[in-house]
Image (cartoon, rainbow, N blue to C red):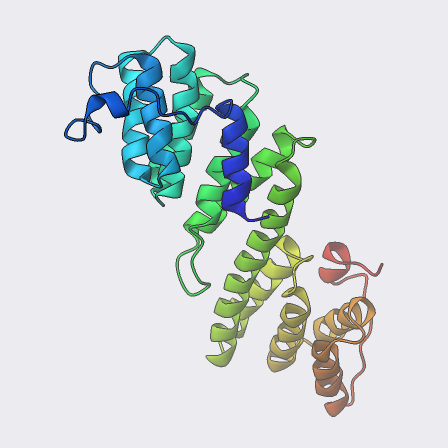
Length: 275
């Protein structure tokens, strides 16, 4: 099930599946998109009609007008979320986030709150760029996804948020590893070690952990820190014995007549012990 279908299904529930076209035909072609001074139901249903027609920005404007003209009605509460969803469909992520946050600030205990938090998280998640760019939005996605899981662990959104959280963590780990490789190629070994250790310490369950350990072995050997190189290789071999990265590290060590060797004094034995 796609994210957009999932969100559409959820928002439809929140809106009580009200997708009618009340009063549209009577308005005439010239003024059918005019939404000032309308009855609340007519305004809302006109917005729902535009949403159904995939005129997302117009739909969002109509839902916003419901709240502006009828701020104390039950329709206004529904319209806040419908507006957030419409902006999301229009790929206007910032406006979607603002609308969802406004809903949460006004109705923190509402039954639709899990959906609002999830929508915010997905808006950040869908803006994640490639690993070569700034990762601020990735960190925002990580925080928002974790908030969904922490606040609503039994909700229908928690499982998908966990999946996206894992993918986001993998993305951040890839960024750290990419920068670490750059330093390694420039023979700035200490800077590289800092990045590789970050992967192990913060993102040890991601797919980048084995390579990060191998790069640490390379860096430590280049600096002559033999015991650390042996300790990291030992942990790498224990946890990923069949990986190519362990084969590479083993070859590096044996090429210098060394062997992987565990050490309780090494930082890695505390971060990623044998298990």
